[in-house]
Structures are given as structure tokens and as C-alpha cells.
Image (cartoon, rainbow, N blue to C red):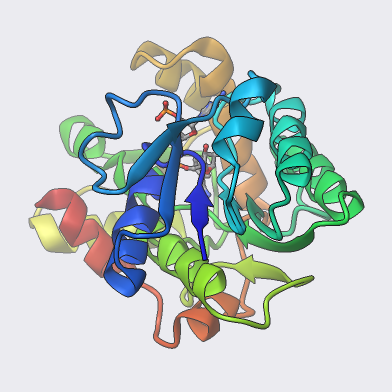
Length: 281
Ligand SMILES: NC(=O)c1ccc[n+]([C@@H]2O[C@H](COP(=O)([O-])OP(=O)(O)OC[C@H]3O[C@@H](n4cnc5c(N)ncnc54)[C@H](OP(=O)(O)O)[C@@H]3O)[C@@H](O)[C@H]2O)c1
């Protein structure tokens, strides 16, 4: 059985390749990548597959049984890009496509959701067996801000009292590996999120506890947060999107208590304190 993974040189993809190799060995794993140079350290066969170049996709998917389609990162372009992959998978005779969507894609207020929902619909219409992994927020999205928070003396955001059920990238990768290597997942949609939700004030308290420094959470208006992110060097559009997702979080967009992720894993998700510790290391 041959399992291929798109986005294999990305952060989630690298976790998936590593965990899949541990479980099945390297034979039968195909990393689908834009750059073979970037894939040299993966330790599995790599093939060029660019979402924007359909000819590369069909060739790269030859002989593949199961495909993990990791959503791309070019927001606004992805529905077309993912449709290219699904079409190529159909032509190449791929038997099962597993797709990384977003938590509660069908009712999420996140501006990201419509693209994911479109890909889900395309996948369902393709006639290929599918599994949808509706991934919640990566804890790393927030722990990535710990160092600037320490420098600024406060953790800034616009998420108010919203509870965030994030989990570590490694957990979502492990869940993908479970789905890729065990039976019974075809036709299923999993809402994946961390076991224990937290507010940004609780995250700031955990940072303060672990560092011994007072790092309070400061909730600021969306426009101010977007401006601060832009001033920190993020492109204007992305800064605005990040701020809007925080506001969505304040209204519960990143919350879930179904625990489907830990059920798939067979163990609890990575605790927030552990992710904070890792980010500080
Ligand atoms: N749940 C969350 O909190 C969260 C947060 C951020 C993103 N996401 C989504 O989850 C995905 C995986 O997360 P991540 O952290 O691994 O993101 P990432 O590190 O940015 O990886 C994205 C991967 O997509 C590949 N890619 C982008 N455009 C492509 C194209 N045209 N053709 C082929 N491959 C393409 C990239 O290839 P290269 O390696 O060549 O650049 C990269 O490997 C993201 O792409 C995004 O859709 C989720």
C-alpha cells in the first residue's frame, strides 16, 4: 500500500512523515513536495507535486492508494488548488483521500472556512472514498507569540474570554497517521481539537508561571491588534486576518469539547503547559 502526503515539507507534513515512518517504515511513503531540495532530509521517496500545476499532480499520484491532502497556505487560492489535487487523484486511481479541513467548517465564522467547505464538497462529489480531518487551532499559533510577549511585557490579543481548544501540531499529525493506517475512517468527518480549552489570560498566566515574569494578557480592539501585528512585520492582509480570527475566537470559534482528537489518538492531547514549555526551551 502506497501512502502519499502533500505539503510534506511543511510543518504539519514533516510531523506526519516522521510519525508514519515510525509506524510503517519508509517504504510505501511518498512525500509530495514543491521542492525536491527541501525534501532531501525526509528519508522517504519524494515527488514534485504543485497544486497550481495539474500535470505534476497526476504524475506524482501514479500508484498511490491513499492520499493525505494537507491544505495549502495560499489563502484565497486554495479551493482551486485543492480541486486540482482531487481531480488528479481521481484520474490516477487514488482509492482514499484524507483532507485537513478546519474545525466546524460548516458553521465556523472564520474567514478560512468557506474555502475548506468548498474542498470538502469537491471531495464528496469526486466519488473517491474520503475522510475529513477538521483540524482545530494549532497551539503553536499562540505559543509562537511567547517570545514577543516576553519582550513586550504583555501578551496582546483580541480573543477576550473566548475559550480555545487548540492542540499541538504533533497531535493532529498523529491523528492523520491513525486515519491513514487503520480501517473504518472512510466517509467520516472528525472535529479535532484539544481536550482542555483555555483563555488567552490563562495562557498568559501559564507563561508567567513558567518564566517567573509577570506577563499579563491585554485584550485590545481588533484594529489595534491588526496594527500591532503589522508593525511587528506581518503583511497587512495577514495581520488583519489574524486579528479577525482572534475576534472570532472571542465568540467561541476555536472552542470544541467533543474530544474526538484524543479518542482517535487513544491518549490525551498535549497539555497547554507542555506546549508552553516546548516554546520556551
Ligand atoms: N489549524 C491551524 O491552526 C492552522 C494554522 C496554519 C495553517 N493551517 C493549515 O494547515 C496547513 C498545514 O499547516 P502547516 O503548519 O504545515 O503549514 P505550512 O508549514 O505553511 O505548510 C504548508 C505546506 O503547503 C505546501 N504548499 C503550499 N502551496 C503549495 C502548492 N501550490 N503546491 C504544493 N504544495 C504547496 C507548502 O510547500 P513548501 O514546503 O514548498 O512551502 C508547505 O509544505 C496549512 O497549509 C494551512 O492550510 C492550519
